[in-house]
Length: 473
Image (tube, rainbow, N blue to C red):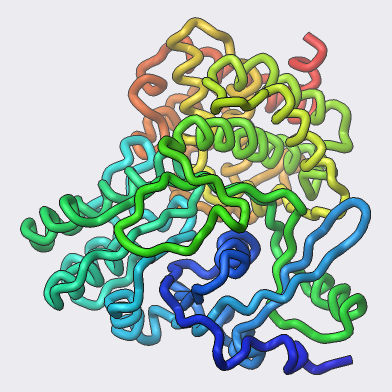
């Protein structure tokens, strides 16, 4: 076995220079966006880790190359990706990150920082001015947050007489480009109103929809890849065969020919992102909370349970699809069938615990939007309401057997404190969270009553039996 990736797999010295800086170099981007960039050709990427040096330290001995392993029911297919040119660690040297973003050859800054990385209020989409990293970035020229890096780097470009880069969000937020533009303008306006005006007039923030299931890489995955490929990769990523990237065709300057790699360049991403966020991410989160509470470790395990598989199909058919306008030419029922097949792929070990992270940031766009619109239209949504109740039970920090749950959420201590065991009191406390629930739901007595009933059933009967009651109703 090789000690690392073979020399023949490292990028050639004549490889294309970096024109993209990517903030948040996690597994998803390396299994999705980086592959599109590599296949489009002619561009490289400087990755930025905003928190820890772990990814940099694993990739550097490999010359920044890594393996993307496709996991299909019929077998595995490795692909060595050599598009990275460098990896910077923001906490170690924030100035180096700003210099890379402000360099004349940088034309795109892309992001996968998860919902919480936007330092915004999910219920409103506006900048959270009390966020600790935003408070730091207002007082210091060397930032900590993703919005802070964008604002300070754009300020450097303006001072140097350079055009702004295109800011390309790749996170699961509805209208992610619009949301990110608003957060950046809010922060820039607090630092320098003239800068905010320049960004508003000159910069581009195209919205995107990204789709690929990327489970967390485990030590066993490293061993399996070594046995199959004959070399040891310290930083591989795992992914399903399916991928999709829909991009609003609005760039400030040069860009890779993403369409040659299969991306869709469109005038309006909104129908695509609503479809994906609500049909995929909405059911993913629902299965994560109910599946975890029912004792299932992965989404595939949950879909192997006929009750939860039936619950997911009921959500699509009766609650989510009726609230959607399909993208042109898209059959939503066929899309739901394809999602069910993807979820059931036994080769993908996508942990319910992983998907359950940061629910306070995810639920507004994945589930609560559908609930609010459906209630306004007079449509019942008992399945999605049960999913919200399951989230509340999950973030209490104890499962149905009283065993501890490792809850990872920026609001985790507050959420745990809201759990009283009494359904009505617990629901009142959760619905008061303005950061999570929009006014349309906070002030909806009918929704409060339905959520209280769902939570009472969940506590009394357990997650699986509560889901079964809806499937067989």
